[in-house]
Image (cartoon, rainbow, N blue to C red; front, side, top):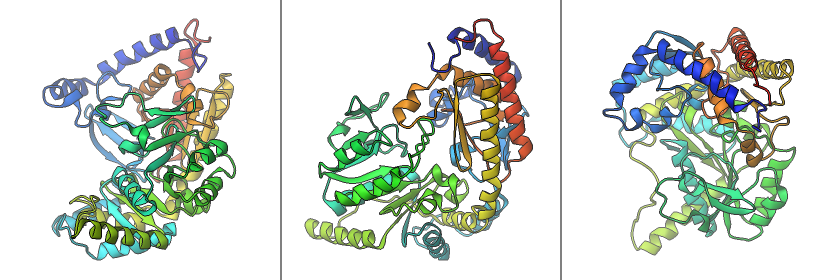
Amino acid sequence: MTASGISQAAVETFAARERTRFLERNPKSVALAERAHKSLYAGVPMHWMADWSTPCPLFVERAKGARFYDVDGHEYIDFCLGDTGTMFGHSPDPIARAIAEQANNGLTTMLPGEDAVVCGELLAQRFGLPYWQVTATATDSNRYVLRWARAITGRKTLLVFDGCYHGTVDDVMVRCRDGETVHRSGLVGQAYDLTQHSRAVPFNDVEALEAALAQGDVCALLCEPAMTNIGMVLPDPGFMQKCRELTRKYGSLLIIDETHTISTNIGGCTQLWNLDPDFFVVGKPIAGGVPCGIFGCSAEMADRMLASRKQAQQDSHGHGHSGMGTTLSANALAMHCMRANLEQVMTQAAYDHMLPLAKRLADGFRSLIAKHALKWSVTELGARSEFQFCPVSPRTGAEAEAAFHDELQMALHLYLINRGILITPFHNMTLCCPATTAADVDTLIATLDEAITELLAIPGARE
């Protein structure tokens, strides 16, 4: 029996019809996909772009606000928003102006400008940590912070939660299986045994967390305040405070990655829940859609970072190289866009618009589930909400994963795409932006209602 309670045969009948509809509806995307396979691996410039529910990639012509338009001329309401990369909408006017302003003033010089100083001040004010560094992506930020944590503590082991998402840092590509840390399935080309220096424990499991930290070899706990990529999993009341308490007790650092959960509040869960991390990471939306990541640290960490650098230079008998940073990190274009984003886009007014709409959407999902007597649940956090194929919202990554019914998820996504709506591809998560309207939310709910009604009308659909 499937986790969703919907039969596999009915899902396949439903999905086959939708695949045919997509191919008939999108001849230009089909033609571009055939052409792309001659020069692009998997027919796309980045292979994740082929992981959608569509029988071939959907090619986009332009995007603005909460809308994008494909090459066949169809308009879509976008609840995916570049999987948070454009959390505040596509091409916000202040970001478009910032790009134009910087275009003839230099894109990268490997030197700072005034924008960098202003961004540092704004980040410190917003997130409560005094010192900041800028990278190209959140993956880079997490990678560098991990290096700093190992240097500062003199310990090698990283602790993460099972099912975590911290970009493509090698060290986080582990899972917890029957109490043991193992490599994440599907990991390609990994030459080293990651379990030597990485450890995974279940989210919301205080006992497992303390047991892992008590071994005395953990440099840091790297975590999201709420899990967002295995399916949304919220912390139990007080769990994040336990993370802070126990890391301090056992001499480990606390790294909070809010690349997704920044949709919760203008200061993230870090400020909303008073998490007090040693390091704080954000990527994706921080520069309004222009590639950029950041990490902040406490004054104590800044002092210990300086001491670590001095020690490394002494050990190498010269200037040496930290091994952290890239030439394009903190480039002039990214800094100018980040400043515009922090000052004019990523504002309290934006959150005040987004959060009630996300609540409206979550309530709509709950109404649909009740209407169709489905044993599903809804999880919401800030501007995000997600319906999951389990009767109670999951508490761990393993529980969220057990609720997967990939074929059903993909079929429902394809139904929505065929009717002009996009949600996050890898699970049933949605995100509202400042350009999202109540009518957009109601359209998604009504269309999903139609999809479920049609699916359940197939003979033998309910298991």
